[in-house]
Image 1 (cartoon, rainbow, N blue to C red):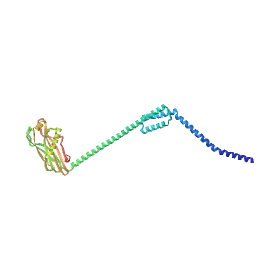
Image 2 (cartoon, helix red, strand yellow; image 1 turned 120 degrees about the vertical axis):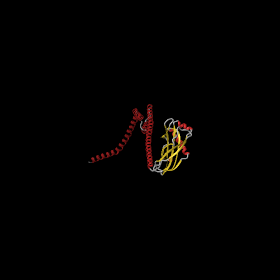
Image 3 (tube, rainbow, N blue to C red; image 1 turned 135 degrees about the horizontal axis):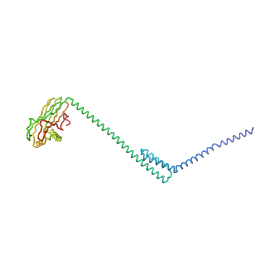
Length: 328
């Protein structure tokens, strides 16, 4: 019995001694094995990184990326990203063979060209978009100006209509004629007398009237001649003394008179397909303000030698009825 107890105690003592040394030994063995495996993995990775298959694979991948960037022309940000990735790979490469260096130079150069092309294409795109926006804005502006012009014209027509529908005075030229009928042929140095007729076709009396009439000789139905005579009349209006009248009631049709003596030069012009022109201007007032009427008329020329004093032609110029005097 004592022998069994002593044997059991011996076993427990041995187990305790064994457990005392087993923990630290296991930890030392693991710490020794792990660094050794890491070193092997690092050496294996280093050998793989330096190997020629890896070199060829990296060059092919980067070259393909460079060619893609040159062909597709991505955005400048993508091109810069590819260039940065290639630069990062190059910085991690060990000492390179000359052929590998040449390959990397080709890749980087290709990427630089792709980057410049991408920037240039991006600038062109921005310029096209800006041009399209400017054209659109210009089109909108032109449309707006057209609309505004239309509205102004409409408002102007409405304003004219309103003015015409208001009570107003309106002196209108009717006709002019020889008084009495002249003896033909016409001669220089002879005093010719003309009457011109007009009427107040408005609904209010015309007051404070100023009027002037002038007879000129010029080529019949010729616009340039009429323009020159209108300028001559404007000077006569400024330098001359218009006739005056106090009031012309609505519907009244008075007449005025003007005399003319032909010079030798004017007779020559008259015989060279010329005619007699009457230029007349009226200025008058009513409760709406001051208005004016300009009129031009001429006898018809039937032939080289005949002036039809019973037929009148209106002029191409100097025809304006009931205009605001302020704009003249």
